[in-house]
Image (cartoon, rainbow, N blue to C red; front, side, top):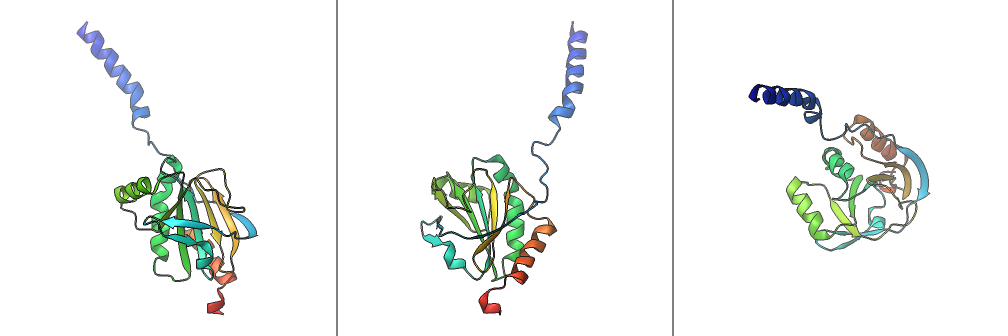
Length: 183
C-alpha cells in the first residue's frame, strides 16, 4: 500500500507542478492611451495628512492622475510601475502625479504606502466620485491632463507604466501643450 500511495502522490505532484509554479499575477503590458480632449473638471482630493488639494493648483503642469484602491488586485500589481514612472519625473517641475485611492480610508492607504515603501504622492477621496471626464467605473483608471487644463488621454486597467511609450506620451504632452511659463 505504501508503494501505491507514493506513486499516486508523485503522479499528483507531477500533474500539479505546472499549475502551482505558474506566476500568480498577470503580465502587465504597455498601456494604449485613449485620446481625449475635454476640459478637466474642478476636482479635490486629500493628502494622507488630511489636507485638501485641488487639481486647479497644478495648472501649468502635465498631471498624471491614477484612480486605484488597496482592494483592487490590478491596482496593486501596477503600483510599482507607477512608482518607477514617478521616479523618472520626480525632479521635473513640469510634471505632477496625483495617485488617488478611492473607496479606502486614509488609515488603510497609509498602511499600504508604508508596507510597500512607496514614495509617490498618494491621496484619497473616500467614496466621492469625480465629475466627468474623470468619472470612471473601472479600477485602475489613469488620466493625463496637459498644462492647459485639458484631459488629453486615459487608460482603464492595469498597465506597465514603466514602458518607454508612456514617457514618450508625457514628453509629447509637455511639448505639444507647454505651460504659459515656458512660452
